[in-house]
Amino acid sequence: MKKNCIKRIVLWFFVAIVVLLLYSVLFPPYEEKNLGNGFRLFGGHDSEIYYWALGDTTTVFIPPDVLSYVNTKRYILARQKPHQFDDAIYPKFYKYPFGRDTTYYWFVDKQEKSLKGPLLYSEMESFLQEKDLSQMLQKLE
Image (cartoon, rainbow, N blue to C red; front, side):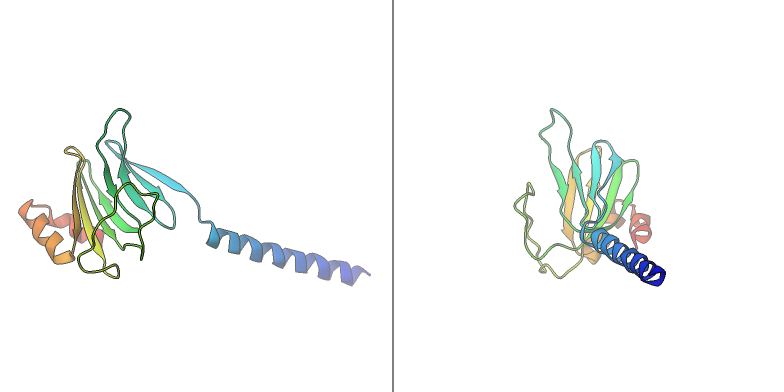
C-alpha cells in the first residue's frame, strides 16, 4: 500500500512538471520594456517595438519578430525576421522586398520619431556609416 502511494506521488510530480513545461513553451511570459522617449519593446516569444504617446498621432512600429536590438539614448537598431503572414492586429503592413525568409534591419531615431526599414544588412551598414554609427551594428550581432 505504501509503495503504491509513493509511486502515485512520483507520477503526479512528473505529470505536473511536464504540464508546467508545456505551459511555459505554449504561453511564454509577457514582457514590456521601456526603451525611452515613448518607445517600448512588447512581447516575449514574438517581440515588436512601437511608439505610443497619449495625444500624439505619430506611429512608429517594428513588427514581430524582433530578434535583437541595440538601444541608445537617441537611437534603436533592430534585427527582425518577419512572420510568414501579417497579423490583422498590427497598425501597418510592410512590404519585404526580399521575401519573408530574410532577416531585415530597422533604424529608429527616437527624437525625430522616424523609422528606416526594412533594410538588408548591407543597406543598414551603408546607412549607419553615413551617420557615423557603425558601432551600433557591431553591438547588434
